[in-house]
Image (cartoon, rainbow, N blue to C red):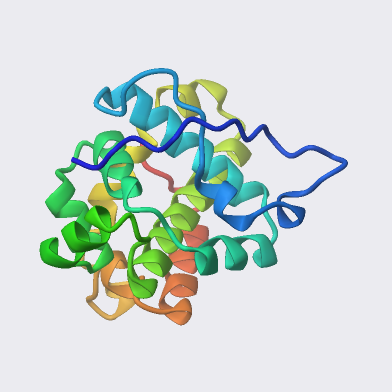
Length: 191
């Protein structure tokens, strides 16, 4: 669907230079050894972005979203979660027409969709952290984080007033509510 991003190396945080001292657009660039057409490559990129979200400050995340979330993330999320690109577009609230126009013009996703992508990544980072804190390394290794979070985002939850977590990604307050629900699940995380 979308063109593979230009290969650029962005290592884990260099202690001498935090991500904030770099161009915030680099937050979204992950070195890819091969085609984005492979699901494994998309999953690796997704996991790297989840790690970056988890280890970045709020200012760095703000700057990354303000710099523009690239359209190729729709394909990354789709490949990592097993959903279609159309399902991901629906999840982040961008129409196919708008997506195609932005992709062809090599422009970032619309602001609201960019915020929803970040909300999705933050929820995945929260879930990953909770699994790490559970102390069960085997469970973390065997757990399909990407598929679980994609399915969970579409479940109507009483804790969210009958809304889905995906619906709550529309604004920061909803995103916080999604993270709070995940935090309350501690100890009762999915198997």
